[in-house]
Amino acid sequence: MELHVRGDISSVAEGLRGIAKQLNIHLSTKGYPIDVKNQHGPLRAANKDGHGEITFDKPIHFFRALGLWLEHFHKDHEFDLSENPQFELSGVMLDASRNAVPTVADIEKLLRRMAVMGLDTLMLYTEDTYEVKEYPYFGYMRGRYTTEELKACDDYAGKLGIEMIPCIQALGHLREALKWNDAASIKDTDDILLVDEPKTYEFLENCIRAASEPFQTKRIHIGMDETFQLGLGKYLEKHGYENHIDLMNRHLQKVVSLTDKYGLKPMIWSDMYFTLFAEDSKYRDENGRIREEILASIPDVELVYWNYYQGEQEVYETYFRHHKQLAKKTIFAGGAWTWNGLAPNYGKAIATTEAAMAACKKEGIKEVFVTLWGDNGAETPFSTSMPILQLFAEHTYHKEVTIAHTAKRFAFLNEGHFDDFMMLKRLDETPGVMKDNMNISMTSKVLLYQDVLIGLYDENIRGLSIGEHYQKLVPEMEQAKHNNPKWEKLFEFYEQLARVLSVKAEIGIKIKEVYEKKDFEQMRAFLPKLDWIQANVNLLRQMHRNIWFAAYKPFGWEVIDIRYGGVITRMDSVKYRIHEWLEGRISAIEELEEERLRHDGPWEMFDGLIGGNVYHRIVTAGNFSL
Image (cartoon, rainbow, N blue to C red):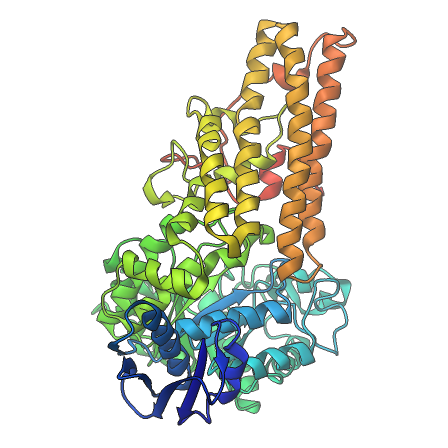
């Protein structure tokens, strides 16, 4: 469509030119006229009497309004729409630290999608995947971003009215950085920095300077979450035991002095202060209030409350009230559940987003974002997060939101069918799993990687007809592939995953049953199926590889290659073991002689939960490195 966008467009002109192709528009003075006004108040998109109108406050509101205008022009022609933003900040945190490091081009693609959704902030989570020139091993062979790459992303975001905020770790979650010998002097435990060590703060100053330098913003997220072993490693040896709250506060004070030095405004994850909230906490006074000296000892930082687990609004409300005791401002972080394994957990993502966003609005939370984590290798493509980002965006501009409304907006802005995407959750939401997969079953990952002869999860799935479930899913995925041409490669990958699992999921159970009957003829009939699995897992690997290299830097794919390679190679050994038994060269297949037990850790089996998202615990009862 040819448009003549005129009026108050100086703050959005560059971004408009950059986003025109995505929106299928051509900018021309001969095009359909849209008059633009930049003024305080709601965003507005209207069309009447042969010309359009857009009113916006922040640049990001212009891009959302333009998307609304185009969507309704194609449907209604005449309309007058307005929206009131519910939050002062609403954005995305993209995980670039779990092997998948999105390329600059892929980040730009995400930024364009965010702009038309109206999401105004992108936090790039980098534990060690950014360049710190003083430490050559920091992010070595991990696809770390150069300063120039980060600056390019930030410049692009700025044109679209999106603020990019660096997100690093200043205490824990630094296992990959601390594994090298050159970090020995600043290491407390395998993934936590050594508090009170001067070299630690020299290191952190270099990190803070390097991480913030490419960005225009003065905000920075410095992490500090999940440091449960703080002070229990080298610190304990050097100084003796000290309570984690005292260590946390003292360390945070020192880190804040560094952010102050560079004129930065820090935020941290709040979970390490959760012990203060307990009713029986020793940090409360006789009236049940957190003691004043404790509150006074917490440095002046913004607290980010992360929670993507509960589906009850009241839980979020309670914790928001707790946080108000500790900080002037609380920020909320929800989750898109891109880290369930190989497929997104849309059921849990929607349930938790609906509950959390309602609580945010009720409790007056002004800043929110949704996380795209990539735990255990980032096997789920981050692009699967788009339906949840769309839901998050609609909550950002409406007090009440329906899935039907979200689906319509998703169809226009992302050129995909929402219901087809929702089908992906059925790869993990299988028979035996509770509705919406609230207990986080990773069925597809477990059954792809688990060993046919060892079968650590065979007892967990026995009697659930899992293979039949996947078999029925294959033609539905194939249809979804045809329904969504812009997303063809994504659905092709998941169609192939369902196809592989329709055969592989229960084959270990069947082989053991046949072995126990000593039915040589039936056992021989399994050999072609093992050949088929071997070939089709390799095809699945190739499809996954195409998606990876289209979006991410190459570093990290070697891990996924090794995982697929393990399945393929083990099939060869399974066939070898069966042949040896069939030909009488061995009297027993010892792996099949073992009694099958239900998997008992590290994630307990409850309410249909099948497995945990940790590769090395799925494939063997042995170990990889000790």
